[in-house]
Length: 487
Ligand SMILES: [Zn+2]
Image (cartoon, rainbow, N blue to C red; front, side, top):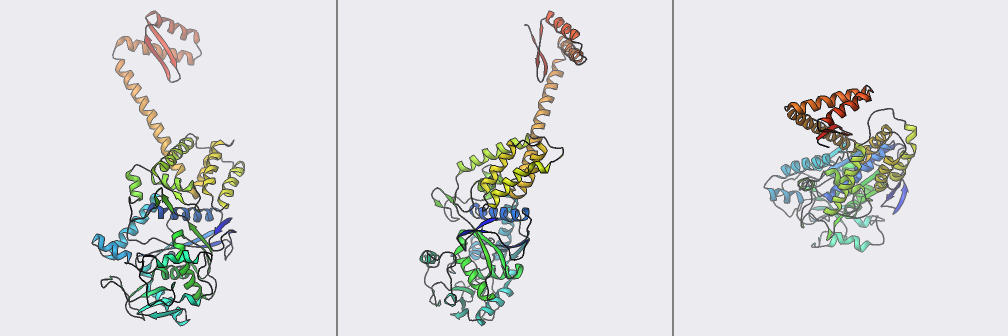
């Protein structure tokens, strides 16, 4: 499998530290608000990646943090604590806010068929590990204390800007923008590992540390959680592109300084979801959440399908029209799958071409748009319905857009409609039969049908003629025989 690696800027052959096994880390949500569908795009694509690696035979071990402390409103250690901001907004405690939005995040994931990683660690449960890591970084000369906070010293590294050497100034914007200079920092890009000088007297969550009562910086949590749950060689680290700097850059700095060797070999970054008027932000305009999609009548899986139709490494423009188009395609696809007849033997050997097309698409830097095209090719293929349904089940174990469930529901709905129509017709006939003349006509129709079934066509014709003599014309339709009075 070829996967683009943000570290090397090339599509690398996917290689793991231990053959057949993948350790995968995902930066989890900061649980101070509902997740934005732009953030959820990253989780959808990471979910597809994890499921495809499992599909391809890897044993995947995946961990994710829940940021319930320490993420300030700027990714560069400044501004207000996001958690505290959420708590103030909603007049709740920080832990209540964390629990509420953690549950909300998992509920969104369930609606989007996103599997929750096997290991989920709230940052507040890992404070001892953060302190241990910071202590070692200080002991090894990579961190210093200034003004009460502990900072990572980026000047001690051979290379700090790991993701993009050409645009150091651009990347540094993340540190500079809208922020007062922190005079304690020895270097512009140094970052906080442990805060004791909180700007807020009412910081709710505080822990004892060798440097005084305080709380961890945001970046340290992912390093500590990853190292402690997945080991010191990480195969794959995922996140949205906005995490590449400074968050992931700082994770690499402190992890490798701590370990004394290279840490994560492959970095997977999902690009932004934008609206036509620029990057969508949680603070501006309409707040696009899964609940809003549902309120507007969209199945969340249609949003997942919409995301799959474009490549994760391209910015995706979100619009309601775009989502409508995705819904039309999705519904058509489901209709066609619903028309396949379930049951019968599956001939896996006959499906080789389709399996290869799907794997080729996904092996090509997780090209989900091509994988969706492979679904349509299955419909066109000269294989049995049983084979097609088997393939859809296989592919949907990765794409997870609910193909078979939705098709089954569609099939049930069609069967229900048919039964209702038949019941209505029977009721109409029963009503009409109250008239003796109509009852006589129906009796004749039934007798004629029986005669035809017995291949007694002479009798069938005779009945038709008898009715015609009484002014009744029979009309044969695919649904059965009806009649009209007169010619
Ligand atoms: Zn992280």
